[in-house]
Each structure stands twice: as C-alpha cells, then as structure tokens.
Image (cartoon, rainbow, N blue to C red; front, side):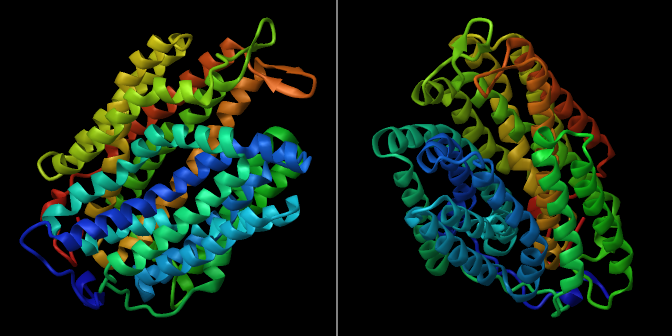
Length: 485
C-alpha cells in the first residue's frame, strides 16, 4: 500500500495568501508561542512562589508539567493522526486551561502543583501546530508559514522578559499565572474559529495503549531521572534505577511495535534513513540551542559576590534590553529561512545555522562579562538560531507523507525534548563543579559559565556534523499532499 492510499482527504490548494490563511497563521503562531511564554513566566515566578508557599520542592513547579507533557506526547501524536489535528489541539488546550485556572486560584502549594501538572497536558500542542502547517496552507506557502511559526521563539525572547518583569515586579506571581490562563483561553478561541480541521487521516483507527505506556512512560522516567540527577547524584542507585527502567521500557516498546496489529508508531517510519537522520541532527542542534538559555539566565540574573558568585546581577529588564537585538535577528532570519527553504537545500541551511550558533557560543565562552560582549556574540548566534528553529520543522515535512506528519513531528519533539533535558543537566553539572554553596544557595563562578558555553558549542557542533548524514530531499514547496521524500 502506498502512502497516498491511507490518506482520507487532501489539502485544498489556493492561488494566494487569503484572509483565512492569515487568521490560521495567527492562531497557530499563538499556539506555538504559548508553551515558551508559559515556561518563561513560570520560570521567573519560581522564586516568589517558593517564598510565598514556603516550599523546598519548587523544582516540581516546572518539572511536573514537563513530565506529563512527555508522557502524553505519544498518545497525542497518534490521536492527531487518527482523529484530526485540530480536534486533538482543542481538547488538550481545554485541559491545559483548566490546569492554568486551578493553579491561579490555588491556596496551597499542593493544589498549585496539581494545576501546573494538569496544565502540562498542553505540552504536545506545539508539534501539532507545526504538523498542521502542511494541511492548512498551499504547498508553496508551507515553508514560509513554518518559518513564521518558528519565529515565535524570537518573539517570546524579545517581549517575554519585559512582560515577565512587568507582571512579577508590579503584581506578583498570581498575575503571571492569570496571564497564562487568559492566554490559553484566547488561544482556544483562535483554534476554534480560525483553524480549519485537517482532512488528512491515518487509516489505522485504533489507539495502541500499551505502546504509548511503554514509550511515554519510559521516556518520562528517563527525563525525570535526568532532571533530578544533579540532586540525587549521577551514580546513585535511585538515578540509575529510574534511567534503567525507562530505557528498558523503550527497549521493550521496539519489539512490541513490530508485533502489534495497530502500532503506535510504525517502525518502518523511523527506519528510513531520511527520517532518523533528520530527527537526530535537528534534535541535537535544537536541544543545545535551547539549553543555552539556562546559562544566560543564570549568568545575567545571579548576583555578583566577590569570591562566591560571578553573576552579572542584571535586572530582568536590563537582560531583556541587552538580548533584544539577538531576538530580533532570530525572528527576521526564521521568517526568511522559511522562504529560502523552497529555493535552497535545507541541509545547507541547517548546517549554516548550526555553524553560526557553534561559533557564537564559542565566542560567548570568552566574552560574557559586559553588555557589548553579549551583543557581539548574539549577532552571531541569533541568525544561527533563527535558521535552526525554522528549518527543523521544514525538514520533517520533507521527510514524511501527510498522514505521517503528526507522528513524525511528535517523535522529533520527543527526541528533542530528551536531548534538551540531557544537555541542560550537563550544563548545570558543569557550572556546579566550579561553583560555591553559601547559606544553602548554589552560586556559580566564571570558569563554570565559560565551560558551560563551550559544552553547548560542542553539542551544536555535533548536531551540525550530523547534517552530513541526511540524504537530500525535494524543496518543501514541491512536496505534494501524499508524497514524502
């Protein structure tokens, strides 16, 4: 059976960019941007939340949502392929909104965690939005639309810190939580009225619950162990047990999927050289690129204490101003990259982006002590990040047929998430090794920041080199519905 035999419906083609397309693009852009803006606001609110509720378990404020998102991603990507991407997107946004409201109203830390964990259901929404671009827009606009969606990273980086400073400094963490809830409600309305349902369906109309539990549960266990590894100890029995159980579940998932009549994720998809090489190259490059935010946030916001902490002690507002030129470059280059993808080999574009971020973060390892130094390496890494985040979803589109799009985007999202957690924890371990603990607080020295930037640059270099293993594909604007590279 050919790929086109399993497609129930095709994407309508239109001659130009219509008002309907514009509304759909705004709705999908909001959907993609809601995850990073939520993460930014929640991350900046953690300190105030910990003080308000007097808890030492603040890590769960962010970790709980990440774990539930990882666990549910296999089920969400299969459901989107079976029942329709818009339908699944609306359902998970409704559930996430309920969690946001519970968190905003919470009078205890336990109830706040319940809300935050429930809000994590929204996690898989971004990859579904990327997958919908192929179904919503004419093929000649798919690349450009994907570039605009990817530009949301730069938009959040540009406006998010100012928004965060205004909400938290003026109104406290409750204002940030209510802003998240209101944003989710607005996102839901846009999804309901501005996004058409995709006509593309997978013929397999049965959910593989066991496969989902094995894959989602296994990866969640690994992410959980890596997230807690720096506290438990990387060689502790607890860390090794959780990682071992997670890896075992994933290993059991592989032979199980070859035998079940209704697999969650057809292994024939993953075995294609074009698919697995794209997953690997894009996930390493993107995971490293996103992980660098951990270094810069700690470096700029931690205080400067001679002999104890080599942070710069900037305010959130100052950090936002200094990083603004980089964010603008990310937005502009991401939008342009979507258009370039129809004219140039996407492998070259991804490699160029990977090369720029590698050089930029290598420069940052030596120049990270003043405003002008941040701007210098940001001018190098910003265009690189714009290329990486924009080309990544386009390469997935080039690699699979339409009915496989949700499964492919979800799989890439899972791999990228694990890579990002691994690299982020390696960054923390690197910085902690040269750090100082004073009055129960972990502080970091300049050598730790230098080594962390070098670590991220090295990971970006590996991702760039992996691009060489990716076979060439047709330009994205020539890939018809029902065709794959």
